Length: 399
Image (spheres, rainbow, N blue to C red):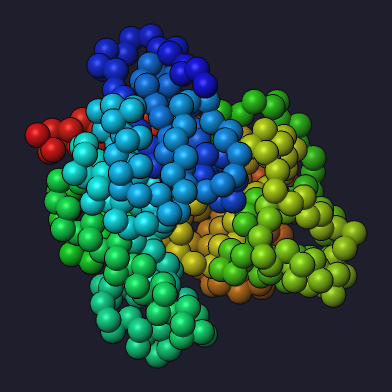
């Protein structure tokens, strides 16, 4: 595939050859894969040469050279891919085989973008069963706390497997020349609490593409883009909306996951079949269209998010958002200005916030205008500049 070479006017940074590593080469199933695909695009637009190593067996939907590295891929196969592309820097987003971290660091200046807390927390949430944050560092004691504070699953084998993966990923702590990139101060804090050197960590907030569809707001239309999985709070949002039957609204849920059947049954049991539409997984272009039509965006994620890409996408489209506070949400949501933050993680509290905006369309429009003004700091060009600075530090540190 051809590499885009369009340069932004006025940019004088030397061109960089960047090889990204991710599970997938298509923008599906969550924010990380979309970020990777769009990072390839925006780096290429800025005049840099980009390649992508991917590890699943899915189709390729990225406009740059790609290299398939199946789960059983050997160190020799990976080395051959690196030597073929000759990158100046390797950026890792996800690895199926933790040993790939050490192999990459031995071949080229390398950095890792940590999109979630599984790098230092087996459960991935660092919360107890009452939604209180956990600040304990990863250790063997996590296997006890899985049950004592309810932060793990109910299956001991699953807990053990997740613990072993986080333990294997902890090799990153010893690779002191590998730079770490995170999207939020919340993730920075997690690394610090797990003993990582703060001097190795670069803050690179994520971005949202500018709107490609003109705004055409439909009063009462609510958009909830999410994977349909436990912890995403879609079930809580349905129960919240069940308490608002006296208000006109329609809810569109965009996303797929193993909870879809369960959520559709719950929607029917709550009497919401005529008001709730499950779109399944849709393309980013289709999602742009739904943002353009929505009056309000819902973000009912129960856990404390490492970033929350939906928030900045809502800003880009000038849409207010209702979200639970805590984690990185507090870094992009200004309660009462760009949306409403909900403290208590209950359907009643979330529903009350949604009602506030549904019944005050003028306030909704004002928040949407403010959200669009806040979007500038999350524009792709700002992201690329921060990323290139981190790449420069990565190269300097390796030397």
